[in-house]
View 1 (tube, rainbow, N blue to C red):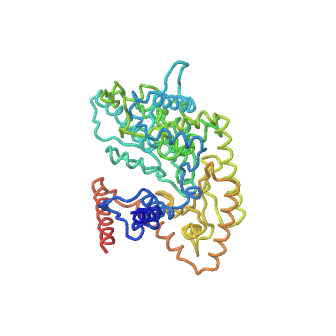
View 2: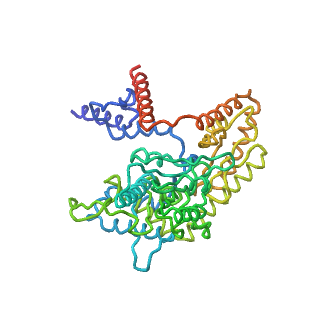
View 3: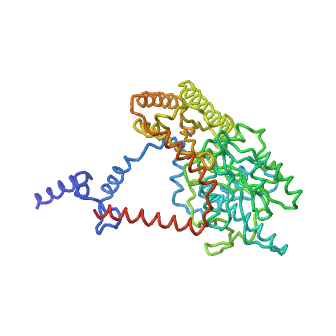
Length: 499
């Protein structure tokens, strides 16, 4: 009996190591739930082993999203990870903390608030949801006005630059709004305010200005747009408003460029969105939308519920939402304060300028980002006759860097660029290391046979020309293209799995 117990204990000791268990010998089901359970150690190890193949978030220079926070905030996040924010009655302090964040951000954006006024806004899971909410508010206000005037309200449109984030296209497609794009051009990669105002008509629900372009970090001139649109509104009798998509720039400009007028100081700016998980310095999963006044948010969009234990109001696209990111945002706001945010943003800008200078000193690149804007360095090769930016991007991955290469939006698709997003955790030492590795890549490319980069440029120019002359597809045709593409992709994936 003693021998049997001894063997059993020895067997348990061996099994306590996940690499000694049977689970690492057999393939783990990927698309069907397994029949039997496994030990928690084995499950954790199997997942950890796969995750090792992911890129290092700190070296992912494609992303604007925060990848580092202080350990004290990490602990606050973990302590509140089991709280569902929507249960406001059960978690009243968390609700109060979100309201504090909304008011702090509203004051940062110069909302016209008195000493006792409460800001109007909402916490979201990111700027995409924030933009959906702001867009719905504009559409509903426009529709209500048109109905009251006895006019047609079935053909709303929205004007923005071709450098928009995909969430704007999603909003227009999901909520049946015509998207009017202002094309960019080589050397001018943001929305031209003069062209934008020309596109505005009586059915325009708003003009969306991108304050911090995803493509090159550039700020659009909201002040000029506001002045031009005020003039057109006065001449036409319309009241077309402006929404500022400050997903990236909203936590930059107040600290680095306080004299820049882009926010609620401009009378036509009725709402602003900002991503807390970008330069708000919080991990992914938090965004904010702020309205100028309570009158700018139609009350019919706000829902009132009482089935969670108390009467409460809600205006979000989703329902349940974790509390962690809200608490993390509040931590950063009170921990850093205005002075701390300014120092962080100044460091980001200085490191971006250092990287820009280093790239210029190679003599091989043209810088397409601007000094005033989001701390982003966007650059392209001066000579693309033998190799292109996509090859540089691919070869940098061997050093661990993720530096995206992509084509500019409609009107300048023949221009390809590389982009480095300088975040809080991208130090001067990392900037210098990246520069060294870029120089190594260039030296290696010089020894390789040429790629047909010139042909790719010509094809991109042809595509721009085709876009200019092509008949615009209907929403139904575009939708069917997307559906068919998904079907093809799923079919191919199924075949690979079966094999």
